[in-house]
Image 1: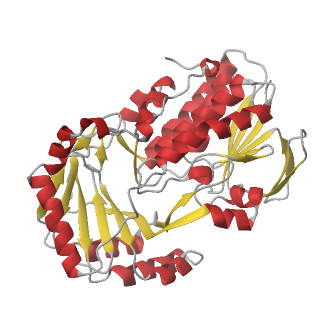
Image 2: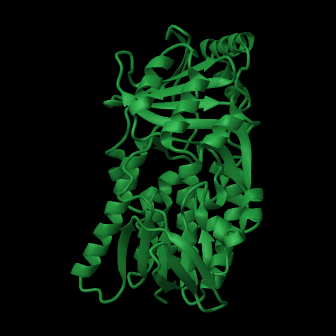
Length: 430
């Protein structure tokens, strides 16, 4: 049965779901709204792990993603003078360890490129359907739009009120609006939303700066005292991505999130001034960066992923946090399962949402496993121990030795072990 569906958020999860829903039933009427005035083609580096690769292959988009692959060849831990203290290799397609593990996966892609591939693919699919004579159905993206509120009655869909005052009824609303989802708050109320948001004790800021002389294809990691760290990634691009991690000046940083970008940047400058290495260069670049974004590292843990005919997808429903590196993969798994379960029970949306909720419990739980919270060094002595400890692991190949001695424990309980369901109803390439 064709549905009228509203997807809130045109990031990664929303357009991915639009593609899958449209392929399952070309007669669906799908509207994707985005608060930003245009497609947000900015953002930093994303990767695929575990089931992300086979899902992209089924969608027929793996080659398109690979065409935008970032040329990052691994990672290195650097000292205050930029000297290499330890180096790490590339992980394989499925997220398995490479030569020395590391932060780099075989397929890394900039967020903006990934979003554009997904949006373009969904629009191209719709164009082909229209040109082939399909009558009914549709897909549209609406920018500069957001939801003010919604109301629903059992079996009658969702009455949505937009910020401009318009009202429209949908059979299904999907919130794919990120870690700080407004859809989630409207669904469950502020108390449940607050309880679901599990802070992990760290803040992170992201932005791009012009490429520097020493920026190459290795990601560079720098630890410094007062619980701070910097990750710089270039991958042969004109811009270098900068990630600032902090566990200091926490209250002031958290209080800045509701303020202007200039005020947020001022707090981060205060926190990182004097940190060493190339910090001053990065802070100067941050001053004029137009893609600056900062937030708390957190996980989202909800009792359910839907309420009535409103469902949550990706970080909005089950953010695993940057620390796991599995946010993109979780979003693709969620889009695949939600579209699959709705297609499997085309005449019963409520049963499809219930099945989505149940099926996602295991992969969400596996994706959210973190081996302890990230503890950044608080003193110069702690920095010394971390730098020298990681140097020993890398130089003596201790990590490789452990994996050889205990192969049965490799990824034994990770997301990679979860079997991806098959949904022939989605009409995807195998």
